[in-house]
Length: 437
Ligand code: ADP
Image (cartoon, helix red, strand yellow):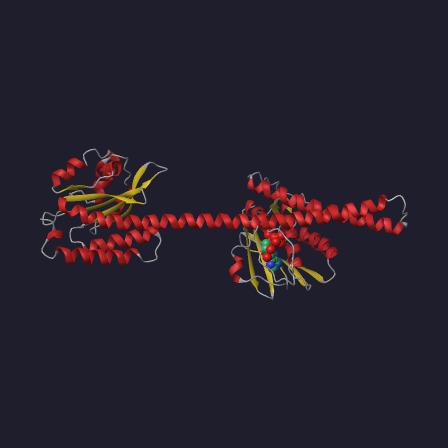
């Protein structure tokens, strides 16, 4: 007789269902949830001396154990290495046929497992301590929402306890509850992917809108100044002509920078990002970037602090300069009231760290994690309205990581931000120096 169909069967079944349902509604990730539910089943169902939740891996075309629970055998968890083909052994057949099975004697179990492939036999014998043989076994498909997710398999190890045909309907209810939990997790994952894709699309659309606005503004200015210069009826004084040409030149530079940014970003996307390594004097590059930046602003001042004898770094000078330029330009852009921008270098045991600190608007801690994602921008208060596309930092990170370095940020809202990046230290033996990044 199976333990389930004793006198108090109905009360026992109700108790088991309540306990399993209580476990299934706990907010756990799927692997932990399945583990918790199998532990509950093992605790409350006398016949469940060991159990396996098999999940179908569609990409591999195999059934793999997601959870194995049972006696305290030293190698029990090695059963998780089992991989069943559709139709192989007990679980494989249940999955293929979509029908529950029950084997009430050790001989029936052994017959049902006779087609187990040799690799799986070795894993099975090791996991169950070789001397122990399952006494009885029940296996039911995990079905929900018209999809078969895998198989719930329970077994006994002693003659005092066995599953019988009349246990199938109850175990099927347990399997349905487990399958519903698996289905719920799948749907939640799909919903998350859809909402992430929507968010990425929204950010991309916003960035494109900003970019087209900026391209149009620059083009509009170029067109305006050149049309003015070409007007035959007006003769502009020499000084004015020079000023118009200067503006045209500046706008062309900013157009070029925007287009280069876009091209760079698509190079990273296409994985066609090649570095040209040379020995680089970082402190010199930093000085050049600070000098360039000083032309752009009268409200910011720049200070450089690199220890004497700062080592030569093996890196792509153009790309490292781009990193410094992006970070210094952001430091200016996101400190609209001006202030000090400090560029510091530090030598550590295996790398160097460069930091760029500003006294600007700062970044709230919850945004620090997303800063380097493509198109991410912190919504700045409307009084600042700082234009940008959210493409600079992802590019900066791609360059640093291509050099096998790291980049991160520290910040206090309203007080300022420090961006830090490291580059591996491989002091260059060459005397060649890069004069101009
Ligand atoms: P963009 O400046 O074009 O928006 P970035 O990728 O360079 O793009 O920067 C992404 C976001 O990170 C910015 O929109 C801004 O919100 C934030 N950020 C970057 N640098 C700083 C800084 N120095 N201070 C405050 N916020 C910053």
